[in-house]
Image 1 (cartoon, helix red, strand yellow):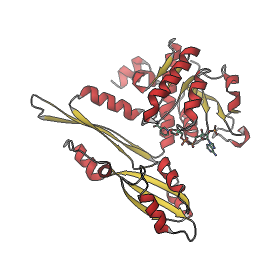
Image 2 (image 1 turned 30 degrees about the vertical axis):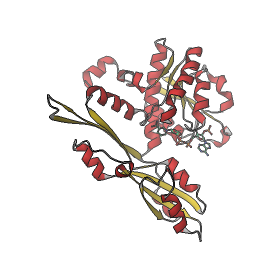
Image 3 (image 1 turned 90 degrees about the vertical axis):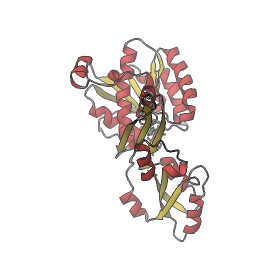
Image 4 (image 1 turned 135 degrees about the horizontal axis):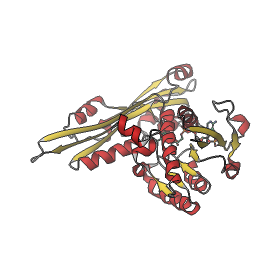
Amino acid sequence: MNPIRIGILGYGNLGRGVELAVAANEDMELAGVFTRRDPATVKPYGANVAVWNASELAEHTDDIDVLVLAGGSATDLPEQTPAAAALYNVVDSFDTHANIPEHFAAVDAAAREAGHVAVISVGWDPGMFSVSRVYANAIMPNGADYTFWGRGVSQGHSDAIRRIPGVVDARQYTVPVPEALEAVRSGANPELTTRQKHTRECFVVAEDGADTAAIEEAIVTMPNYFADYNTTVTFISQEELDRDHAGIPHGGSVIRTGTTGKDGENTHVIEYSLKLDSNPEFTGSVLAACARACYRIAQAGETGCRTIFDIAPALLSPLTGEELRATML
Ligand code: NDP
């Protein structure tokens, strides 16, 4: 069987993660990478990988079965995914939860019009965490949902710190409160405030002579980002930041606890947990599996937009139905 030909639009952290994931899957090959920057300045891991300018998107429709969009959710994907769905079958990791219905509608319209399939908002959250929530809720109608994130780097919170005057660089980790996790895992169904669930750890490089007390105050009182959390601020050198905080780890747990029994006497705890050394490499791996499903749905003659909820597990796997039944059931 011919490999599924994958294209990547946008070559940042996630674009690199998708490239590695495609290389790890024998039934896929990378056709090329599109970037809005000068292609000569973008260097994929694979020395022979073609790099094209994003303005040439319409010129490679015969070379690509599924285009994976690896741009940012804030401003790139709301424009790029509907536009690309007019040309290709597409997959994205749009993660602005509140705007997913709107994004779905725009992509669905474009994909249907062009006769393509789109799979949006896949990754881990939204993505694998979302699937876990749906399974747990369907199985246990009487219960409560919890999501804990971390320990992991929040790019948005790190950026917010970098915008404070006197800050050169910063890394922010979201950390679940161990006691809260334990209480939830015990099945006690605790009601937890934002502050009780997560803490925030900030590692900050300040300009020489900067007022570090003022920077710390600006961080811990920042509305929406830090004011509702117990936040610690540690000032370190750029060398320490580069040495000790270069990775992009993340993860977390989706937990649903609930009861069954005549009087609700039996408690059940469902937990799906991720500990990721590299957020973009894991997310890229989910995107690659979803590109396989996208390809198969398109091959079946369907069109329009899907989310992870619409994708049967077998469509994600390189194994045949027979192999799956023999080895994973
Ligand atoms: P990046 O900031 O690394 O990349 C975003 C885009 O920036 C790239 O596609 C690239 O497009 C552009 N870019 C511009 N200048 C540069 C440069 N110098 N180096 C690298 N890229 C550059 O973001 P991430 O890849 O880390 O994340 C992308 C999105 O993935 C996030 O916005 C998030 O929404 C989503 N995500 C979703 C997850 C989920 O679970 N669903 C989990 C993790 C991330 P171009 O090549 O065209 O210039």
